[in-house]
Amino acid sequence: MPLLFIEADNYHETAEEIADKLEKHARFFRRKVKDTDGRERPMWRPRWTAPATWSGDATYPPVLLVFNRIGERNPNRTIPRLRELTRHLWVGERQKGGHHHYDGRIPIVATGLKNLSQHGPTGPVFLRFGRDHMEPLREAIGNPAARLPTPAPGKGPRVLGRSTEQGAARGAGAGGEEGSRA
Image (cartoon, rainbow, N blue to C red):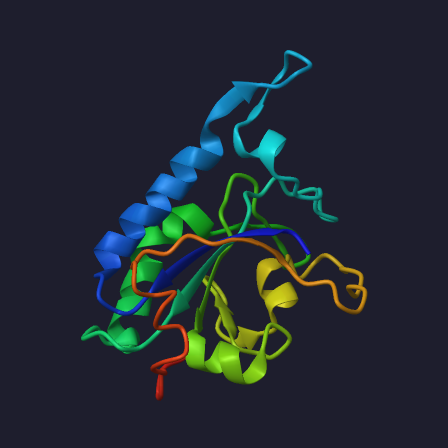
C-alpha cells in the first residue's frame, strides 16, 4: 500500500480553506532537494517511499480527506465546491483506451469518519475526486488501468497523520455523515 497523507476535518473549515491546504501539499510535493547521490529528487521521496505505478504515472502521494460531521458545514455543498476549487491538482489526462495519466497530479480521496469506522478501508466508502462512485481505498487511490496485486493479510496503508482541526483526533469516535457521499 502506498504512502497516504491525511487531512481530517470536523466540517468547521470552508472548502476554500481546505483547498488552500491542498495547494500547500502540491507545493511541498513539487519541492526538490539533492539526494545523497547528488541528484535532485522530490523532497518527499528521500523521506518516504512510494512505489512506481504500473501505468508509469509519476503521481504524488494520495491525500485522504477524512470528514467527521460535527461542524456547521454541509458536506453536500463543501465537497463539490472543494472538487471544483482543486480540479487542477487532481484531474488526469485522458489517454487512448479510456484510461488517464496522472503525471504531476495528486490523487485526492474523501471519506466520512462514520462510514470509514463502519466499513473499514476495504469497504466502498472512498470517493476519488474525478470519479462518480464510491470505492475501497486501494481502488480509489489507484489508476483503473493498473492491475494492483492484492495486499498480504495484515498489511495496511502507510499513513502520515495531519489534522486540520486539533480536536479531530480527540473527536474521532463522534459524529457521522448521514446523507453525505463522503
